[in-house]
Length: 355
Image (cartoon, rainbow, N blue to C red):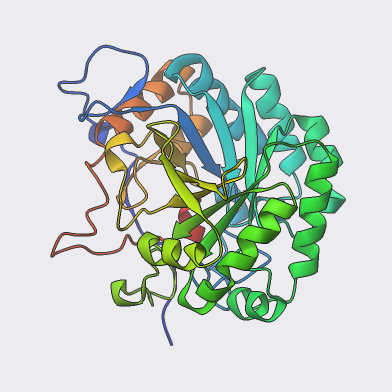
């Protein structure tokens, strides 16, 4: 049986090993050595999830993170405040695992909204149970949701997620619409088993006023079953969608956006494709990530992490924490390196890193 762990990244948590700032320009923002600036903050709040998607989670779930090792709502809000006030963060997204597994998610969002008034706060969720909490989340300060939905075929959904919860996802989408959260985006990881479902999913998204984005599967699954030979590429997906729809390419509306866009049947609807593997966009990446345990991860595929939790729980002031964060991002690697002959997937899977 495959041994699964949340990963053992290389941590910097000793002041003697603080990230180097040598050569870094004297600017407040999160610039790296290649001139990229991070404005988009992703914070994972848990490794737990209510589904077991084969491209992300092992069937038994990830090993639990000890409660005392998770960042508290107050600590998360402090990082949001530092990011927005001192480092140029413009939007914040809470991820997982599944963020709805945190019973205190409303508190996390509420304190973060108070710490950074006016900032865009969103979550990436599978939508299971969202209808029961959406009003409280919006009242706390939630401004947008991205919902993961890979197929609208009930049998294929149950096989892919190892759970029969499609109706609950639909209910969550309806609730998000009723709460006025817009634009409502759907994320679909394209798998070989669901490729034939792609046109039906796009038709459903258009009919239900959702913006759909397909995502090439990346080697971030906990079971380590990813192979390039089995990858559904953007080109193959476009061919499948083209059997039913007329697609007109419009490219990236924002250079830092991961999705390339196509107009569907003359508009106004569009569909996006995030081709991380075959059409990488690393040169324009503007994200900085913090794991559920409080480590800065500058790249999905870089195992070097800088631990901010001891600083948060020690006597470090906001300026010191901001400087450690800057150092972590200054050391960001040039790209994911999937085309290199010596490429190895990161120690952590997507569920342990946060999307």
